[in-house]
Image (tube, rainbow, N blue to C red; front, side, top):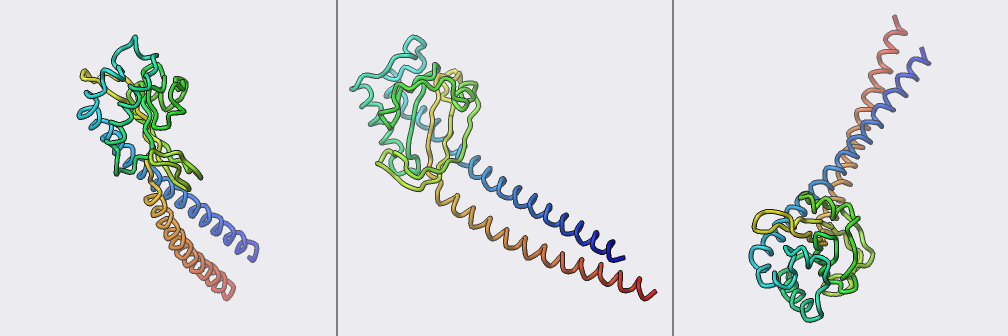
Length: 223
């Protein structure tokens, strides 16, 4: 009888632990996914607004829709013009860094000038965006070179967004790094609160179940 009671206790404990791990993982994944989705949608909107409102000012410089210019780097004067337009556009937002790629994967523009000219043609995020699908990931940086200078301990969402021409075809890819530190910290606090509630709830369920099992065996003994 004691062996059966012990088996039921262990089985119940294992089931509750498994349920706790499952709910915890699902909740964490859901919180991260919601932040990613919201930020990616926001970055896509920012990119579209830029293309619709300011891209005509620098279209002849970037020449994203010119296949023969896709592998050509900007001159110093051209870079400074594009840089001024982009910096003015994102001023006061949570966008920390912007990169623009041609369809060949060449980094035509980056707010970090040292990255201009890099080949990102093999990057999975770039390739997906080139096919028309935006993609994002959360990344933590102890130090990050932002437009306004070096920043530290930031949780960022890096998004690859297709740049579409007037005929809706993809003519390039924008990569935006957005500071989501406050939102991610808030989600972590919510997650900690959820963990606490789960632990308390499952402890109560476990104690109740132990009581029921113990009572049932006590009654069976009396019989």
